[in-house]
Length: 187
Image (cartoon, rainbow, N blue to C red; front, top):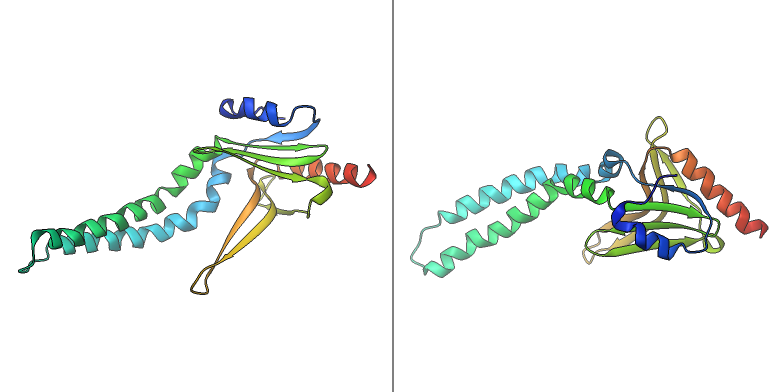
């Protein structure tokens, strides 16, 4: 069992008081980052177009007032910032991996995440809907507990997953989850 990152130790201790831990672990940085590569790849053309637009808009000449002419480059800078955020998303996820901790106890599985604030996802064994193991070759992989689909106003959908991501040994975590479920059924 791995120890919680220093930033989460007090929170983990307080949350799990009196519970027996079956398994605990932290994500590997590269395994955790794997989910953000699509965003980073999309960020390349988005940022390139935003930079192009901003430079072109900066060269707008006309009889309008200076304040109006300044609007277009400033508007473009917003999109450049969004594009850079997309490009840097793997770096943000790598930093977040060091602030994430996964635990399976006899009663529940818990995900601790501290980015700007503490977020705790708790899945009790009695109401646990199951899980899906996604192997990444070797022992690495993810365990997905839940998929949330959010419908957009224009018919699009965005799926977010909740689970243990970037595990070095997905099989140990799976074994602990199965033990948790077996104890819940027998008890």
